[in-house]
Image (tube, rainbow, N blue to C red; front, side, top):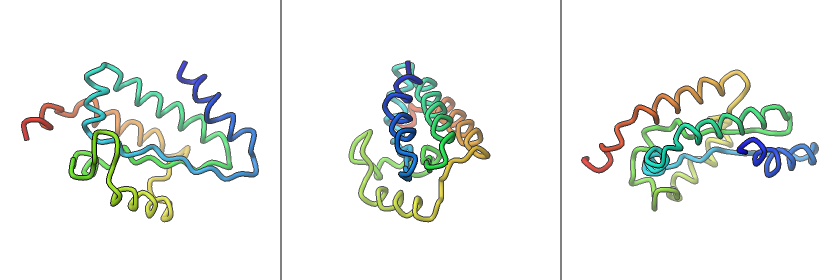
Length: 133
């Protein structure tokens, strides 16, 4: 299951290393990647997996988690990507800056709003616009 995978591959490392500060981020996947998940019928599963990972990690004080799937202007600008999964060096630099500034940090107080925002955006997006623009 997704939760078992998260527990085994992510949470176990955090739990076993309480003196280590962990920084995780959810990358700003391109709209083409979201389109692929939508076409395969797994878009809602992807969003649910992000929610599960966030909730699992927020239980630990040695974790900071950042989400960038809500940077919709950036995600829908295909000039920011080398392919559907890999963003440009400029975006990589922005992510480093955002983390340094603590921008995009997900907390117990704001992660539901983040999940709701990305869910609403990606489940209602007109993916045909990518190819007709």
